[in-house]
Amino acid sequence: MNLVIVLPGEALPQEYFDVRYEVLRKPLGSPRGSELLTDDDKSIHAYISIEDKIVAVGRIALLAGDGSVKDPVGSNCPAFEPLGEDVKIVLTDDKGEPFASRLRPAAQVRQMGTLPEFQGKGFAAKILSGLEETAKYHWNARTGWLQARIAAIPFYEKCGWTTYGEEYDVNKVGAHRSMWKKL
Image (cartoon, rainbow, N blue to C red):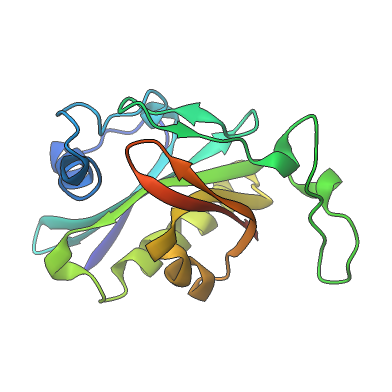
């Protein structure tokens, strides 16, 4: 098992995107090409390979705005309210003090996926940890943000992430909750 971290601007093998498509887009009936995101070249990527076969992938990107996006498949991901200009949800630190002034640099995890036959082996946790650590080092990221499918929430909670806000539906994908983590 080999964890590979790819920094912004570095080349990724096509197999990385093939896994992303197979796990995240093909099950939704999305076309080839929908696995590519416009800011992939500015993101940190990680993947696990076993005997030269990529089996799990993920990425993290520096957030300049509030995290709201429209995916190539037509899914709309809402803003991370604590990062917006009109803050409605105020996060607190371990002592209950407001955390809003210390949320940036902020980074967003997206496109986490593991081939079905390799799930449950801890590969996604290794990828997530690698992304978090690299974002802290490369961008001095203070917080991480993500929009988790409901079924994935227990995994992220085991990795130290916290849900906030109400459940919402991401068009063509399903029910989600927003999550964050102090890095």
